[in-house]
Image 1 (cartoon, rainbow, N blue to C red):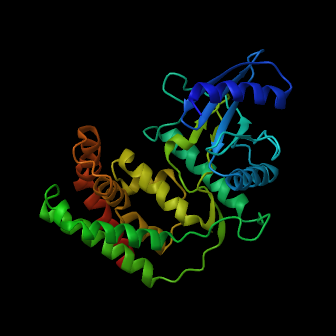
Image 2: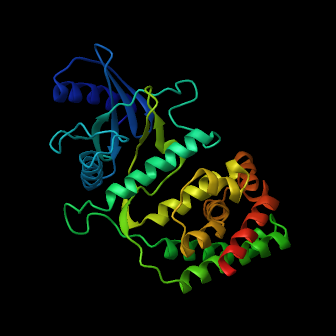
Image 3: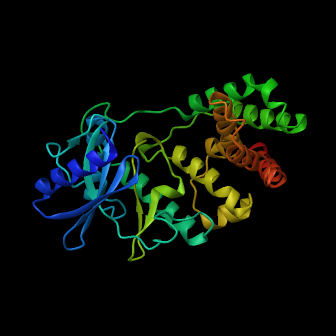
Length: 318
């Protein structure tokens, strides 16, 4: 089905669902559209890969909203009001009027306020999520971050001969040592973690600043059930490059629940492994823009990262 056919049919379909005259359906991304009504009111239409994915995210966001979370958008479409386009199920969601129209919807981790507000909202999701029971057993996956990282580390190690062309020997050795130390440490530590709802993707683009100043968390596509430190350590690793790998700023600005797994996770260079593994898997070596990004991820602030990890090792081993 062509793109213009989809938007035309979406316009007609959601006009009937809402009982309102709609003016336009404008593509934002390949699976997201902005729907505008006659009087300027707006909605978001989003394609979910399966109806089960839609039902899972609908249940999670409704449960969080019922518990008092104000920082997420509501699903408007009922289960019998989905549009099927051959690629998935398209549903209407609440539209969030956002402040950064020129910059795009999302916040930026370069700003301290955005980092602090995003972490506060993430903590609220975790606190509320502890008391939410699944609507059906097994609705949410129970991921193992440790297994995922073992696989990522193994793939990176297997590509040593290729990587040695692009990464100096001493740096490769450091990357190996950090990953091995972190995985060994997490394997040896036994923790009794309280499980909760996890967002699963705490990148800045999954937070939107409302015009009223409040922050919203969107796109629970990777929602799961597990220890809060899974989200916490990935959030910390997201923001560390923006605070120049400063352990002082990390602790001063954010009330992380620190345990051994969290500390080991901070030392695991998951971002570097992920991007090089993707480069090899998709053979992206000839893509100059991509390679520039991967090299920047690897080498920019590398000395600061080394000092940070050394501090983490001292904290764990002291």
